[in-house]
Amino acid sequence: MFELLYQNIEQTVSVILFGIGLTILLLQRNLIRKIIGLNIMDTAIYLFLASMGFIGGRKAPIVVDGVTEVSAYINPIPAGLVLTGIVVSVSFTAIMLALTVRLYRRYHTLDIDVIALLAKGEDA
Image 1 (cartoon, rainbow, N blue to C red):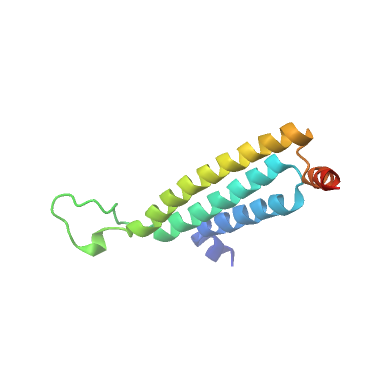
Image 2: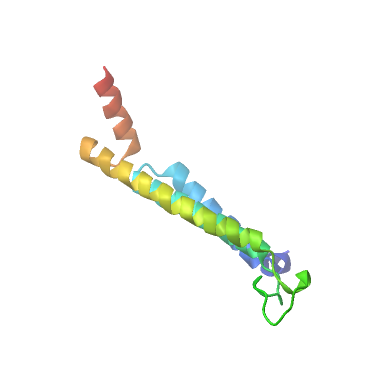
């Protein structure tokens, strides 16, 4: 069993990282820690996609020296998905951090439960 895990070490690490990020996201009340947990989950997904797209002995899909056969190159789709995901993740993280700063300025805390109570008190 451990041999199978070692052969697929990248996938194993990505599943562990995703679990760590999900645990942080679910159990922490601090907004900054929740954002960090979400970023850990993103990183796990990128690692998983990159490891699934890698094929040993093949090169990046850039035609050099006239080699045009498909079996000489890796699939470029997972790399494109990872790059797109990184851009979306950075944008989402920036928006979440900006909203967190606004919440902190208004409620003077980063605890999501306290913010919910204070916001509910303002509505009344």
